[in-house]
Amino acid sequence: MNSSTLKVQPKDSLADKRVLIVDDETDIIQLLESMLAATGCEVVTATGAGQALQLCDEGLQVDLILMDVILPCSINGGALSKELKTRLPGTPVVFMSGYAENSVPQLGQRVGDTAMLQKPFSRTDLISTLESILIH
Image 1 (cartoon, helix red, strand yellow):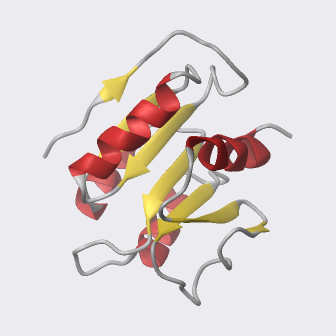
Image 2 (tube, one colour; image 1 turned 90 degrees about the vertical axis):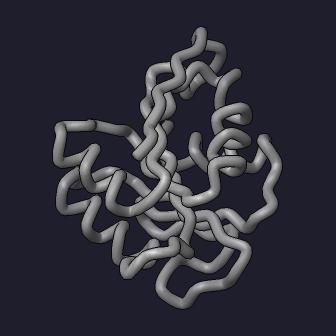
């Protein structure tokens, strides 16, 4: 299992936030890290459900979970989100998907502390979505 933490200099309103990225594709994780680098937020990554749950069980605290809806394991993004929220109560979730899912908000919409981004999305869309959930 690989996890990494990337800390960069604060540049905008996400500078003091920690984001957990959960995606099975390392190239997507690297792209998201790059997109978030200029914000100054801290990024922690997990390449699957098991690793994300393990990080939380080890005491990881985050301000937001950014995760793929489709994960190659016995637990999908919606179910993983519920599991993570039992370990990290009140933590908002932003789902990413190339597919529409009935179990999560419609693409581009926000419902409470959950939102959905349609892949592919721009850095501007990503930052805007995270800010809308994290910065009240």
